[in-house]
Length: 271
Image (tube, rainbow, N blue to C red; front, side, top):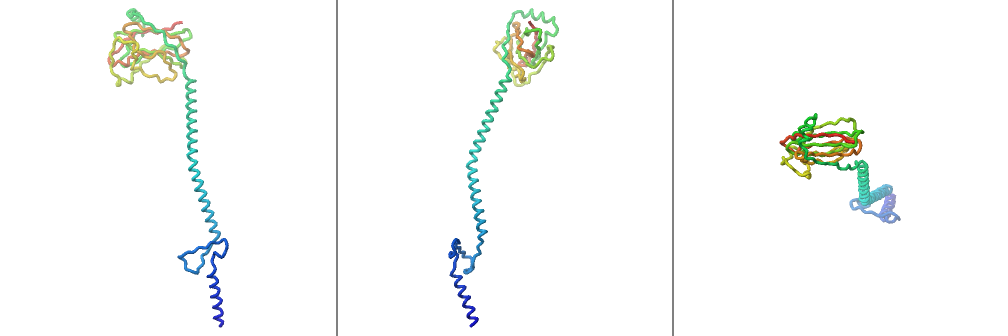
């Protein structure tokens, strides 16, 4: 009897427990798992569930923030590009202003003239030292003439034997350190690219192809290099001093591949 009495309460307790479900407790949802044996209770950790829910919510918020960031990124990029464009435009304007401020004044053209007294000039210059020189084929002879306080202008005259020669004038604004007139000879670097031209009487509109470009930022052009008919008439001229500096008178024979040129010239100052 005692054993039977103890068994019955146990059976009654099991039957009561089996009749209960999680749905009997408000706020708790019932979950069923077929893989678990019937009658066993699944452990529920509310703290873990809350942590997982919080993590999931944080992940969702992070995804939303990332999505918003991606949507806003093009706008920021566009703004950055616009800012860069504005900066570039500002830099260009500043460079243009600096360049304009540093631009040298435009120099007036020289006064030029010609004379038929070629023989007379040659006969006179043959008696003067260093007034008759040979400008070899492919060479450029540059006469550096500094300005002097005692004068107001520079003057020149020249002629050649047999054939023409290129002539041009430039002005170097670099402060004068020496009053000596010097002569420099340079070779053309474009000999292999140039074809020999027919030499003879040519118009002043024949621009000298062999002349070198000027790279000195202090250099101003007064007269570009043109081939002059110096074998037919005396080529002369003058130019008023624009300020302190050095004149560069270029006698250019770089276009000739075969012929040397005999040059008769003189350079002097005038008040």
